[in-house]
Image (tube, rainbow, N blue to C red; front, side, top):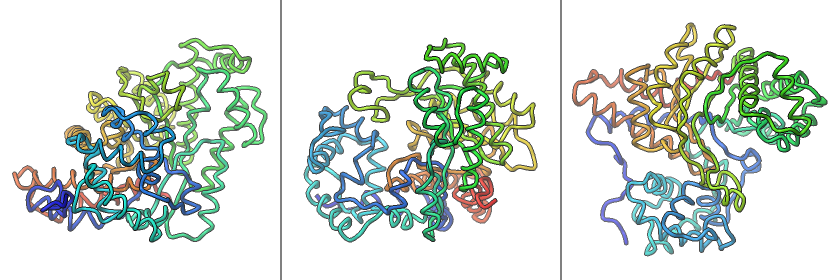
Length: 471
């Protein structure tokens, strides 16, 4: 069914002349720095193409899989062996039931921006038409690099393990492409001593990458420092850490070394030893980042792989995670303070997954702001389950009231999808609508140069200054 008025239109989510002008005159034109994503570097370097809409739109998308399961769709149509067209048709069946879920907005933004489909919404009745129109666009040559370029993305930072060769980053950098792709350091596996077998297997990989026999805690740190140096040479300027909560249970160097030896012998650590080891590692990572002028990102709060049966059947990162319920303010403050006492606290971005922690992080960053760095401590954008209208608005409000929204480094995709750059558009529309409403009600001056400049800075300029990728 053709819509009389497009669902995705020029003023989508913009209410009032002020909001419309802020978005169209200031936000929309700004380039994108996507400083945290999970795009596979080899797919960027090889300029990946896709045979059909399912491959580029549904495969690997745990947001969509969760909703398909919620609406009674069997697993074979999510992660299973159904055909691509069958999977698409099943998702089309679900779409009419997703009103008020952010997927309804995201999906139709993606269809509009990348496939020029804005005259209908996805449903079983429109599935054939949308599939065929998308197929025509894909056949015409849509590729990974084209999608990035068409989205006005200037730079992306992928998420990379210390043992990664970065061969795809290096080959891409040598290609002369006008898009920049840089690595970001994600050393979670290097401190995952809760599973001795997995940890020891990982150390073999890290050892080979660093060219160092990792037979002691000191050797582990030496190997990581060597890889950290290599990442820096390849243009890396920020790290990322996926944490259930902030670890802070400091202990002596000898105790940490003994915990390492225990794990290397194949023995299981206690909960206390696990946190002691992770604390020591996070402090080391912070020192490394500080020495090189990197920014560290702490993603706090997920409860991962809750459904153990499905973890065994389809693996991690497939839609069986939820918001955690840990209280971590005191430990987070202790961790940041320990680095600060050493004058080794790097620029830091804190992300929370539980919305109750918005004000915790908004006030925590104020404890460690320090000139001459502008906005050294950042409250990260709405993330994962808060990567939607309500979550973004809550993050903006908390940061506005208790920090400095004007200094915010802005949005990111945190996605494995090449179609997800509409998340930046979505955020910019929400930001402009909030600020436009403030202008209309007299809460901020009716000065487009002032407020529009703030929009441009949050959209792009602040990230350019903060990360200093050209240093």
